[in-house]
Image (cartoon, rainbow, N blue to C red; front, side):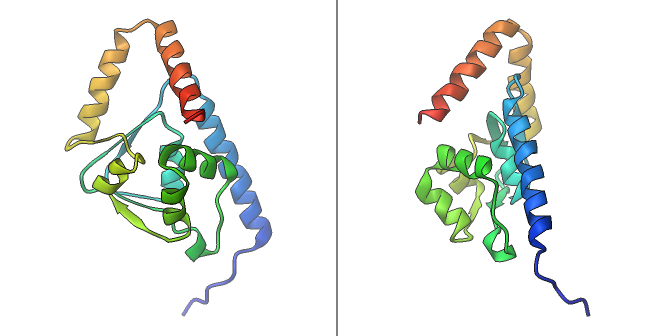
Length: 152
């Protein structure tokens, strides 16, 4: 039988710093980013999805952030983004309450932007639309949307 050990604080701090760097870098990439979620999107998966500009999930997707149960906390960039997207109360339900949301609830609370039977085909349609657009127009629109989210 394997005995579980308490997380080493230095390891946890190192992981959080690395995760913060990765999420921040992803959020700052210039082109718009699209998350395709099909199934479980827990913890770090939610963090990566929230770093994207648009999140599309299948009807069977599930979302949870079991950090406290695992003795962990999340990097400030992730928590800030989560609160911007879903609000402080729903963020608390995920972070404190350990709630698990199905695709319908995640969409109703704004965690995902669309539910689609065929997630890949839906994202491909968006990308096809972008392929016909001017790069500077895409960049300008992306900047405007991201700026608006900060003041939501």
